[in-house]
Image (cartoon, rainbow, N blue to C red; front, side, top):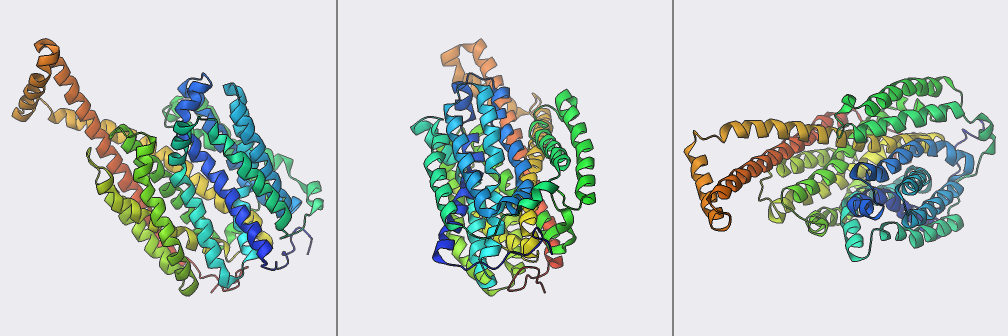
Length: 522
C-alpha cells in the first residue's frame, strides 16, 4: 500500500492532543461564524467602502465561492501537507486576511481579501471532522460529534447577533479584527499540539491541476448562480446564464477527471459507501434547514416586525440556548443508543419546529416564536451529531480526509441551494398572495370601506381630507403587501419542514457504525 493510501496510525489521546483538537474546533467555529457575522452588517460595510448594494454583495459572495472550492480540496492537501501543517496555514492565513479586510479602503481590495480569507480558511472546517475520527476511539467519539455538531450549528445561529453588536458598539472593522488574536492563538496551539499524521510530498507530482481548474470553475460558478440567481431572475440575466452554462460544462469535465484519474483531486469513491451517500443527502437537508431558518426568521423580524439586529438576536438567542442545554443529553444518547434513534427523533422535531414556526402573523414576536425556535435548537443537535457519526463512521481511515471534505461540501451546497429556493419561493408566493388579497380588498366589501373611512378620519386632522384619503389607501396597500409577505414566509417554512419529513425514510437504510469506526458497520 502506498504512503498516500495507507491508513493513519492510531493517535494517543493525550491531554496535549485534546487541547489541539479543541483549538481546531475553535478554528472551525471562527471560519463558519465569519459568514454570518458579516452578513448582519453588509449595509455598514457598503457605506464604509462607498459601494452600491449590488457591489457590496460581493463581500459575501467572494468568500462563499472561494470557501466552497477549498472544502473538497482540503482532503488532498491534508494528505500532502499533514493535518498539522494545513490547519496551521489555514488558521494563520485566515487571520492575516482578516486583518487585511479590516484595513481595506475600497471595494476591490475588500473582495480580493475576502476571497483569500474564504479560500484559505475553508480548510479548517472539514479537517476538524476527519481529525475527530482519527483522534477519538468509538466510545469517546459521541462526545466529539456533539462538540462538532454544536459548533457547526451554533456559529450560524449567533453570527448575525454578534455581528450586529460589534458593528453598533464599535465599527464594522471589528467584524474582522476580532479574528486576529483568536486566529493567531489557534494557529500557535495547533502547530505545537496536533500530531495526527505525516505529510506525503510524493502526492505533489500527481497533483491534478486540470481537475483543480475544472472543480474551481464548477463549484465557483454554481455558488454564484445559487447566490445571485434569485436576485436577477435566474437565466433572464446574462451573467447568471453564462455562468450556469460554464457550471454545466466544467461540471462534466470535473466528474470525468475525478472518475478517470488514478489520483483525483477529489476522490468520489466515498459515494460507493451507502452510509456516506445517505449521510451526504441528510447533510444537504440540514444545510437547507440550518441556513434557511437562520436567514428566513430574521428576515421576517426585520421586514415585518421592524426589529434591528440586536432585537433579532434577542429573539434568536433561544435557539442557541436550547442547543447548549441539549448537547450533553445528546452526547449521552449517542453513547448509549443506536444513533439512528436520536436522528429519527431529530428529523421529526425539526419538521415539527418548522411547522409550528409557519404559523406567523404580523404580530408574532418572542412569546409566539420561543417554543418553535427552542425546539429547532434541540432538533439540530439531535440531527447533526448522529449524521456526522454515521456518514463518516463507516469510511476507512485512509479515505476519511477526502470524504470529510465532500461531506462538508454537501452541507454548504444545501445551504446555497436552500437559500436560492427560499428567495425564489418567498418572492413568487408573496406576489401570488398579494394578487389574491388585492382581489378581496375591493369597494364591494363593506368592511374595506369602513376601514378606509376609519383611517381617513384618523389622518384628516393632520393631513386634510384629500390627503387623508390618499394616505388611507396607501396604508391599506401596505397592509396587503405585509400580509402577503407573512403568508409567503409561512408557505416557505412549510416547504422546508416537508424536506425533513421526506428525509425521514432514509434513516431506515442507514447502517449503524461499529464501535471502532474506520469502516466497521453493522
